[in-house]
Length: 567
Image 1 (cartoon, one colour):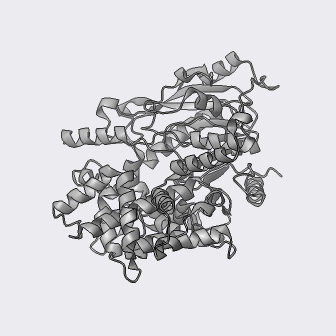
Image 2: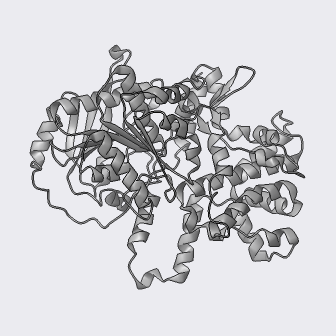
Image 3: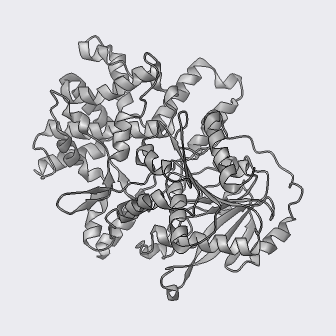
């Protein structure tokens, strides 16, 4: 048991993955405190007088010493940009929470919070983090002219219910976090913010936290929030098999990626051409020996460690191998291709890269140049960060950055990259136990002439799935799966709930939208609104025309006005 725990701790230490929300960037300019905002010491005193609140301090957002964020990669410059849109002072504080809300006798821990304070009479937007606490001002807070309260998710960053040297994640689930949020909001509503409207928001996992806060609020009959606005939040139920077993792996986002992302553009447009090429690439990998060899080589060069695991699985004559080395390697190549494509669509707007998707015709007819083969191999393994760099390098070739200052759009893209640099280690465990995990749809391997079947791909690549990563811990009783109960019940609840107004916002080309709330559920419930933007990526910056359309902004604002009765 101890060996398993130490293995898990080692795994957690290495799972520092990319975050997934976005915003714009401006140079930080010292701002005067707006009229009506009390002096700093008065705010600190008001917060310190709230039961449960401790360690209140004014945050110097150019000083990274205030929050260590163990393992984070943000630079001083990134932290400076995080407060660049600030128009009000920011305060950090801790809130004392039960380690286990079901057993208060176990003691307490301190949960990290930050408050952008604009005034006690103003509205409040709560950013319900699903990971470490990032520091940025949301467009929702801007739209509502609201205070913004950031609440770090338990087991991330500084908010640890268990000591770091004995971190079993025993109390990591949505119910515990929802009760954490309720305690903080209740305390601040009772003692400081007594008149304004309250909204909860978040993007991706943060958005799941927001939506589940509505779910648990209805369960406990809380009245903390007037509206919930989750962006890009998937609700994945996993997979139930005929033998009665359950897997957290859910191909719904993978199917959406394969069939919908990039689809529906005008015939002959660069996007329509790119969509056909993107669908054809995995078909050719399965059917064309020369293209397959190049793709397999590209994957080996990009990720030799994982490639070696595939070979070891084959050499060990594992039941997860097809028994054919070429098939196994090709199955892994499809996994890598779809994984990279998922991140490209999630975080980089399609119109910015549609015209670089390789023309496959020269590869098929044998007329491709060496440069065309090289770029094909580069493209199929190119994730969002590599794509960002490639596009930036292309731009530099067109215009010398040394001759001019960065444009507003370039500043915004720089900040988007920063926003994707925070760790989220415990997330995979929560995905295993109750939230579900995205998996690939390999049905394209059914292409006539393919050397593979979808089942081959699923079997060979199973080792990389969230289910495989934690199934031994599940069997050992360390982490218990709920069999998809929470997500299934949330979806069922959303059909008929009548107390919690929710505005679901999605991006059309975001694969996670495949796991989003369905149109039928929204159509039959007046408490729900769904907005799908054709320009956006996996982000919440709906006031920025570079990333959201005006039509979507209008729909979101109208829904806010409806639920908050602002007009």
